[in-house]
Length: 240
Ligand code: G3P
Ligand code: MG
Image (cartoon, helix red, strand yellow):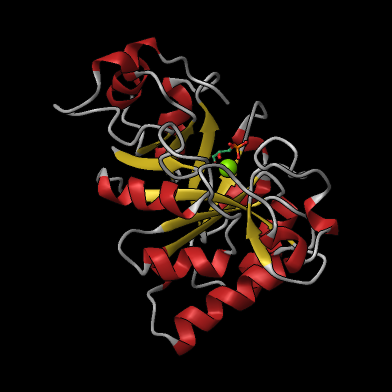
């Protein structure tokens, strides 16, 4: 079962920051996950919420900020809100990156940036997985850059009713830990899709999902399983 560091090692460092991604690599995560919006000035930026209010010392809608505005913000422990490009440079193909498209009209700039890394810098398309709850954006992305695998995110909707999952480029079906069932895992596998489950911060839940043969879990604690798993992890509750 793959361990995917959710917003980096966000249980230990401020979420979606460069130190959180470095920590995830240090802890041996198999992949990192991050969330992406586009600034008013066009740059792709790594942040979970539509506003900067919760995760920085500023206020405002991320899509209405310029790069200069963004550079003034503290995202915790003196970290800046990183550009997607900054994260790619730091990760530098050490582990794959799951890029979750959060904003609308974002598929095109993300496809363009990843195409630059694949075509001009020689990165493998498998260095990336692009995912989203917005399946329309995913479809646009797939049409623009079909070499990169994508993950279709779901919350409660039975995924087999959604036409997108039957497309070849959809490599994974990403399900909410609160609702995943053994039957869903089996039917995804029958379709030839991997199953990644979010967000699992409880070691016992992780063990249960491993027994269901899920292919990966998103966790804020990349050391959640294995012999070095912190004992206190049993006190953490899983969040969505
Ligand atoms: O991609 C898995 C997970 O990140 C989806 O939920 O809200 O944490 O982006 P969220
Ligand atoms: Mg996410």
